[in-house]
Length: 364
Image 1: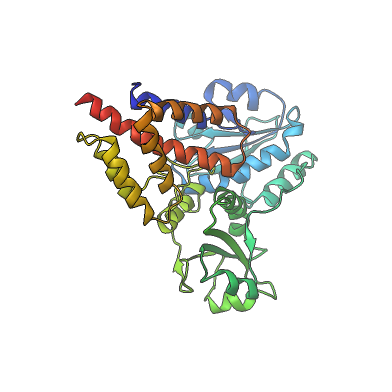
Image 2: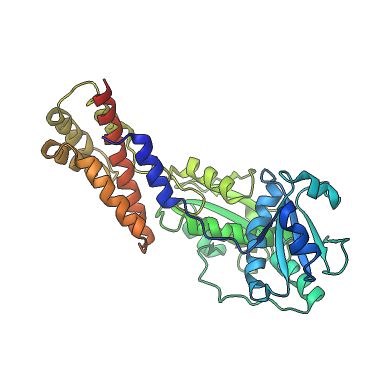
């Protein structure tokens, strides 16, 4: 059989492709040509990969670059990893992250940007400097559910784990959080028992809820476990990764940045323990019967898939490996609805567990 590590790496490669960024990556080798000598004005962010504020700014800055992308022959929106390229950061007086500087295309001495880090403020600054107005795409329907006094009572305390951001229209930090919050909501869009929501704490029809929840500053984020109206304050980071990790822990989900599923999605510990018995030499027939009985008491819909794999292995020794290859081929082709992709990834995870156990048995 093919080594499990090879199969796993191949599978991750299928899902590992990222859309190219609209923000231009600047390094010492191209900074002079692109920024200092091109004659084009440039807004440059000096960031560090570990910086929390930089992570919060990233989706806003990406959207800014997309909105001005049509004018790439007249304007540069770029970024420098100043943690890696420290000399470049020092050259322009960077002492903290993120630092944004404006290069006018004439002088080699930049002007610091000290405005808000929300899309509206950044766009207005670039337009003021260049006269170029951004072109925004028609907004897709929001995945974030806006709650008011009535719908808050309907959603919180029910069968969903609910993460709520209490915001205000004028709040700069709320504006910076908005695209991240939207991304997180999209990441959980196919999770039936998770709700990512917002409350406009200053709206007439939601003000009472904000007051009842003791909201005094913005944004305030609270988590409400399913079946409970007692909140847990969220005090973690505000990056997509931070919020995903928090909700995965609280809701028992397995989402990763970008909305996909990790390798634990679909794995059922009690059935996985039965699969492990194959390593000890138990016959497929006996463990298959045990799995069938165990699955009867489980509500997880993928319990039946474990049973199916056991049955198939009883007829075809290489079923798990062959079926995994087939599913990966479908995933590789793309064009799948989110729900279908989730299903294929989950089944692939389960198949990979059988392959791991089978391989371990072969190596004994």
